[in-house]
Image 1 (tube, one colour):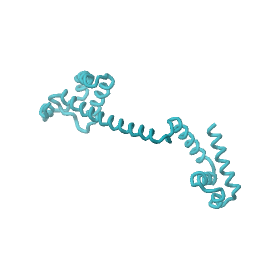
Image 2 (cartoon, rainbow, N blue to C red):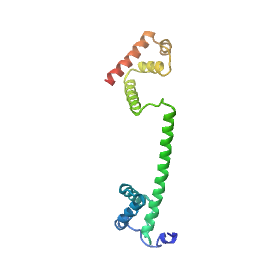
Image 3 (cartoon, rainbow, N blue to C red):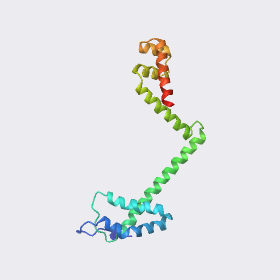
Image 4 (cartoon, helix red, strand yellow):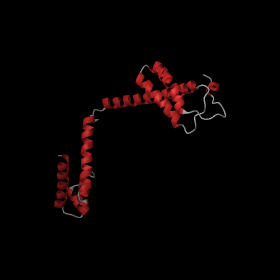
Length: 176
């Protein structure tokens, strides 16, 4: 297919995308089906081809060879899709290799459980008094002892323990 065959006819009005779709959509899907061997993928790429034309910032010119234009657009989308699939396969293979090397990765269920616990903890920390929140974070995230937290907050060691218990009780109530 030559560049001249796809060239726009100069000084003519923009072609209606609806007419282009009506006249060539079934042909494009059939052409893609022969290439891809899957009707769902063919339909997706045909749809993406017309979406790309709709998304163009310039008016679609009247084409001498509309099927050549559509075929070229669809081929470019297939190349983009192949590149994307290759990147995705490489990423998945890398993640699989990392998982096989280090069994420390949590399962999806464990990751979801951890996320739920963190969300519960975030809600609780937003709801408790500022000093209770600070005590919890200083002790559990910064690793400070009860005495160090008490000194930093200007309260007794006993009060720090009450703050920590208050947060933990709220987490248990939220989780239930």
